Image (cartoon, rainbow, N blue to C red; front, side):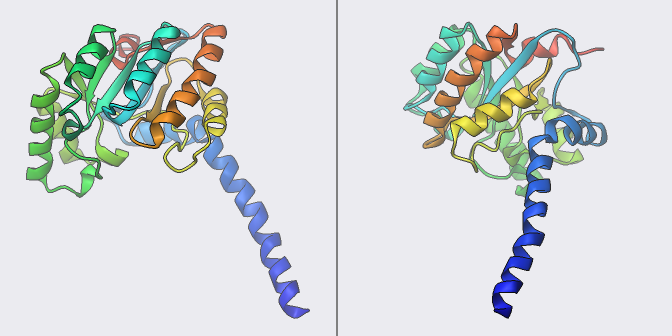
Length: 241
């Protein structure tokens, strides 16, 4: 009896906390990201504009199994995006990168491996920036770099800029690596997107089919709302000087 009361008491405490946490995460692009961007300058999170444009970005490719499917959905919706590729995934996918650039899509630098960039030594980070850049730039201009796992510091930012890149993160992150539901990811994006937003999705392995399904839900809806889906470089042209 006493144990049952304790369990109910814990649930009564935990449920409101879970609801509050869920609401905080669901609305984070509207209240948290602007504060992070203000206190962590140097990376592009979004662009202030009234024009209905939004940038979609994809991390961790190329993926021979799913990148082509993403390209097909983009083409069907007259959309362009920026693909942050990991250079160790390029071998065997060279023709895919050539097709991607020919379609008007953009390549970004996501370093050499899927790992938290902030854990690398300064020397290892600099080497990864250069190695990935040399590999990816064979296929087209590479203007943007996204640190692995999104964390960065001032020293990393300086290295990114010295290498000739702009640092890019994003404003709408639907937790697609953690939550395996395209329906939830789609609802999150549509609830939080606004002019100038930068959406982050992933395309490697099991995440690829989920991203394809998410795009099939989201892109037609955004187009019906008057949005254009553009590359980061196209979006950044709207950034106030």
